[in-house]
Image (cartoon, rainbow, N blue to C red; front, side):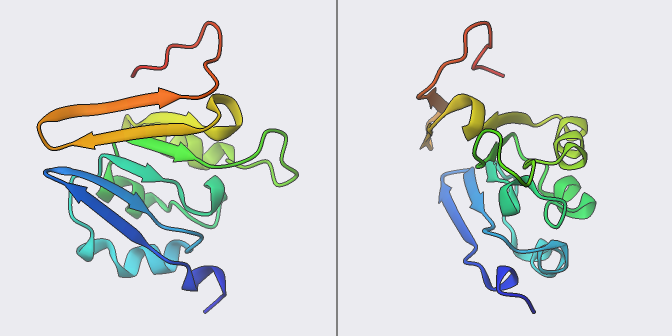
Length: 130
């Protein structure tokens, strides 16, 4: 098991809304905890910055997140998030957010209201609502 596979995985629930942060775990570890994840997943922070080692097909289909956050720097040398992972989430119908483009993001979960999203770096011409 790699150091990445020992990452902290965090699930936060507010009513029926769920935030899931998988750290840098790879697809093998994702498959191990598929049955343990409470559904639906409202917000998922994509594993390992959206690299090809995380966010496997089974995991993406099973969690089917409403919103996905890619936490990666603009112009990073690893080219995160990778196109195949972005495409996987798009095909699932997830709303995609990136700290490289949107800056810091704030997701407010409230049991009685829809998720409220704020971006700290609004991009002209980009709708920040999905």
